Length: 93
Image (cartoon, rainbow, N blue to C red; front, top):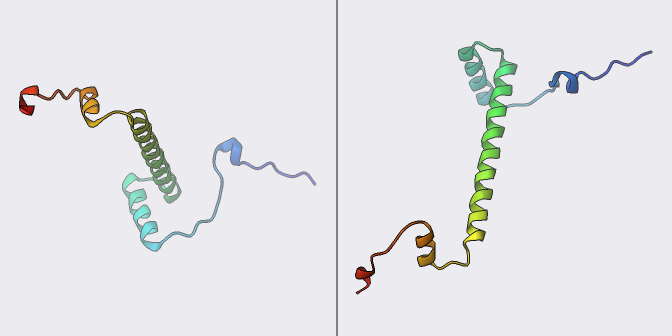
């Protein structure tokens, strides 16, 4: 007997069963109806959007941490100068 090949990698989709909170499922159903797509499509889009947002937030955190490391040796005054903030020397007198 010949086995069928899995369709997942070829089509880019894979069938699965999920347990979701009722409120989340109802909200996804409303989104699907508003977009005039089926529930599966709406949930896939919602997940994709959430994953992109998480990845963007992670990249933002990495950029901020890199910035902190790069400028950690500077004094507050040096950091202000780098940021283009020039203090009026007359204010110190």
